[in-house]
Length: 157
Image (cartoon, rainbow, N blue to C red; front, side, top):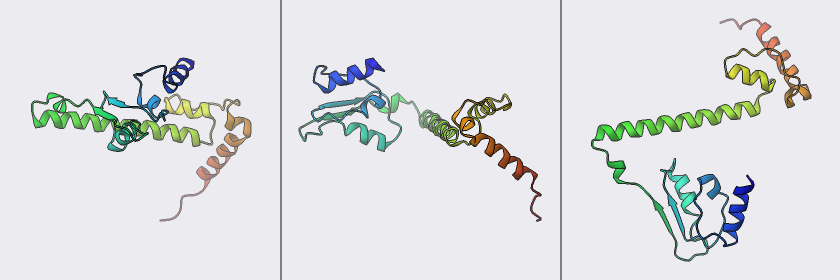
């Protein structure tokens, strides 16, 4: 982290003319005289590309944003292109699913370790007693509330 911050500070101060970085680094850049933004990897959306490319030329002077996109990677057929796009969509859905899972973890009222154990298929076992939810009593209240709901009779159909 320290190296990243030092590199960004030097770039912002004009000590580095070029920085090769991930989009996460780039989103932290608000350098008015950035003249060139290049995308080696295909951005995940047009919105992402627009935001990332928009880092160039914020001072109103000429700048370039380049997307290295070689003839849809030289696909030999429509079927090959369709397979590539299908895989790209699958990876995007997987990324979205992982983000949603992380959000559920952050919002969970149960013991964080129990949540992790459940996630990894280990059965949730005893509360850890050390996470934020255990220390605040939230995990215990959530367990009691869950037990009450499970004990309620099912509504008549």
